[in-house]
Amino acid sequence: MIKHIKLGKVRALTLEISNDFGLKPFFKRNKYHYEVIIDIPYTQIIFTSGNWIPKRSITNDDKEIIKNTGCAFGTSKN
Image (cartoon, rainbow, N blue to C red; front, side, top):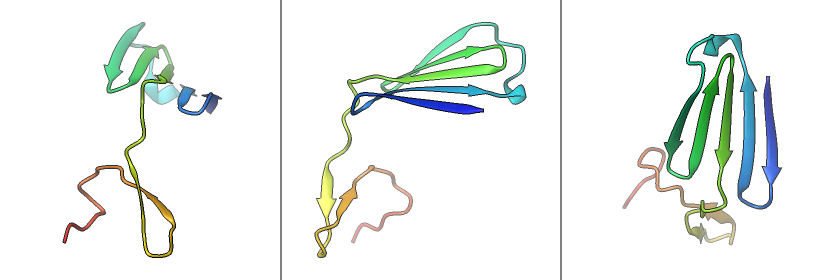
């Protein structure tokens, strides 16, 4: 089960409960970029902070907004 709670424009709290996570670790906290990931038995809590800023937006010829994620795959650099 996944529960996603939006806290404003860029902050969010995600709670995922699954048997795949198992009993261990009992409590483990990790940081990844602007996210805090907390692992507890059978549960993972992810908090995305308000410090996260989306990458700049670019537009194509039809003036549709395209988010530039900065990922190397799925983009072509000509």
